[in-house]
Length: 224
Image 1 (cartoon, one colour):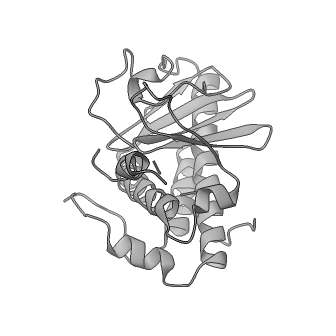
Image 2 (cartoon, one colour):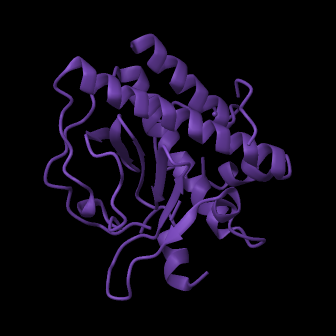
Image 3 (tube, helix red, strand yellow):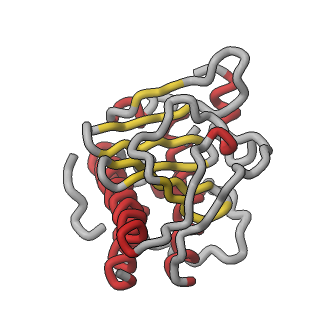
């Protein structure tokens, strides 16, 4: 992996889970996209989601930089690097024919046929929704994201919540795969190196990432 990609992975710049909840690549201080309407979520979901997404992207970045090999590639993600003259983060995409997951160093997105697309920024937990059903392959920076809209009907809100919940269970599945295919201390050691910059981190250090994502999924069920 080149030096540029490793820089992009830093915070600054299939078995089913058993009630226990995927892995990150670059950032650049850039302006916020033109329209950013957040999905309306209860404070408890927002607080847990905010803390969990940042730690998850930290973990994914470490999985990509793993000396023994890139775990996202091993899991089935495909890497799409920006062009030579394009500044931005490599995009890692996983697509099963229906659901698409895309990971950047600055955020994560999910798109699904019939449901639209939803994305979450790393340090700004305001899930954004769009009726598009596939994330463009040209997104490498936050301002490259499609225009989002505020879900204005119960149906649109249901689509957005469905995508959020699917993202939670997909990340849980990935984390379960990690726990089954790596040493038991692998993820724990990565989390121990996390540069905890936040005073409002509500996640428990004793819970694994899969559990945190499944907890969020259950909270969304209650909210709906």
